[in-house]
Length: 214
Image (tube, rainbow, N blue to C red; front, side, top):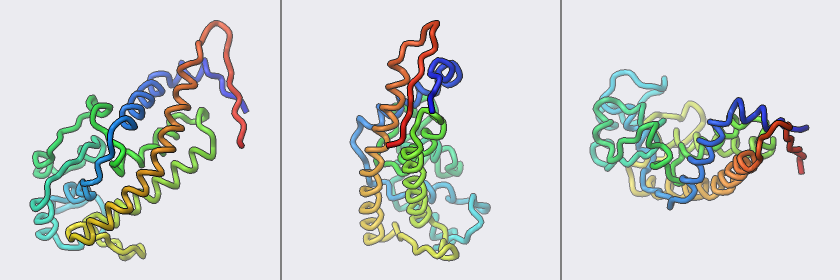
């Protein structure tokens, strides 16, 4: 199977450049693992209606107390944009789409989950095994994300990671670090996939690169 790089870059060149810039900047930063997944709590803060049709494990008052008792340090725009109006000002950072390449860091669960999103956007420029690895990691990341959330996920056969307790925080960070370490390699491979595309000079003759599964 081959990829017509010239046509691909005409169609998705801006996306390739953005993904390369974002992932390269993210990979260059140290991982911060002290957020404890509080973004999901901030999305339910002081709110009667919630994003997920599940009961709150601690009830609304208990959920609000957890948010108010912690420092919120969310760097990921696509998480922050779902904060409730009352929670948004509590966040130490105020990420925007424009500042995304300047703020994302590799310890963020959502930044690592996004490896799957970027693999999908790069489409045929990414080998199938890499795309599958990104999907599997995103699935595990999202499972931890919801286990550490304020929602009661027992109906899905999952046990909570009670980040409002010292033991829960320790369990969350341990799993977060292990998953983050796996994301490092996947992010590096996505960066290289973008680099290969961007190194190819597109001229009047169509250039093609061949992809072969190992």
